Amino acid sequence: MAEIPPPPDILSPEFAADPYAAYRVLREHYPVYFHEGTASWLLSRYDDVERAFREPVFTTDNYDWQLEPVHGGRTIVQMSGHEHAVKRALVAPAFRGRELRERFLPVIERNARELIDAFRDRSRADLVDAFATRFPVNVIVDMLGLDRADHDRFHTWYDAVVGYLANIGQDPAVAEAGLRAGAELRAYLLPIIHRRRAHPGDDLLSSLCTAEVDGTRMSDQDITSFVSLLLSAGGETTDKALSGMFRNLLLHPDQLAAVRTNRSLVAAAFAESLRFTPPLQMIMRQPARDVVVDGVTLPAGSTVTCLIGSANRDPGHFAHPDRFDVFRDDLSADTAFSAAADHLAFALGRHFCVGALLAKAEVEVGANQLLDAFSELDFADGAPPHEAGVFVRGLRELPLRITPS
Ligand code: HEM
Image 1 (tube, rainbow, N blue to C red):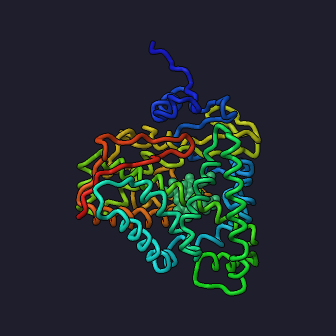
Image 2 (image 1 turned 90 degrees about the vertical axis):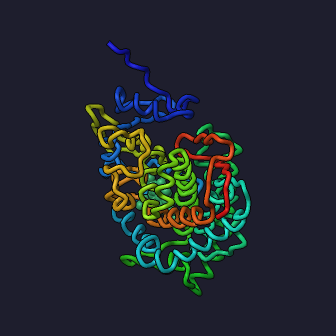
């Protein structure tokens, strides 16, 4: 009889080097497993993770301690029921449909172009530093109608806030820097919010100041916390998703060539990349009462870690899940950016990523402009860089050899 491997430790260096091998062991042998290091229950199968996202008994109260300190207040991802529905309805219109197409698409296009202009004539560039990590943050700053001269300042706050959220080792200096950045961001925003309330303009910050649903408006604190949330929820994820997609495509040159020739495949490549290497590898939930999953009782108030990276590679849901394939027929690019998505990279249910269509627009514009600007792209050092990170995972650098078109 084959020996059953021991349960993997998701905080070990082996896991950080290759989580996907460990996910397989968890799915096959320990689908509901209490992990001492994170003091949480790990769910690794697609159906269980999906259930945790869909059923309201799995609350997001865990974000009270995970997110609230750095964002300086409650954000929609912590909320539930009516409060969540109203606050989400206040912010959602800006991230979809006409608002997105007519108001913000030009902002996205301009920011992609400006960043690419800075390395258009070079023969080498780090796609992360020169593009992916700056692009979504610059877009958010411009959508909010803030001073474009503050792009770098926002990037510094972004670094500190995402550093705080990734601080598994609880380094006090990192925690302190994150909290300080959050406080600085709020101090910067408050006087601007007061001015926009008095004289609203045609920008996202003004919309947040004036929007009203069911007689409810956003308070100053709602707005500052939301903007702070946008830096991590909308910045870091898109940064990792964009560079990850290029890494996956460069590792599969035939698929990159197909996407280059037929640009309607960019959305499929992005969807498949989100399935294959999701930036948010795991997110947590907190059961409101005892709940039984696969015969195991998860106690009320416990922490449940939903392993998105594992669910997206569940062979019960995707054929040949460890194969990157933009042509796969069990993942639809038409639904991949909606709450009917097959993959779980944006979660599902009521907290389904409110910025999914914005992320899609950013990645489509960014990828198209990069492919137009450079007739050839290749790993600068011949080999792909490794992904890093456990909760949020992706590339810290992607040095490329580039040939201008
Ligand atoms: C590829 C890029 C992205 C990925 C992988 C991603 C992933 C996610 C996931 C997994 C959640 C659910 C969190 C939970 O249920 O605990 C979420 C929620 C959210 N995302 Fe995204 N996201 C991305 C881009 C964006 C962008 C561009 C924005 C906006 C600028 C954004 C804003 C939000 C917000 C505000 C929520 C909270 C929604 C709610 O609680 O109702 N995200 N995202």
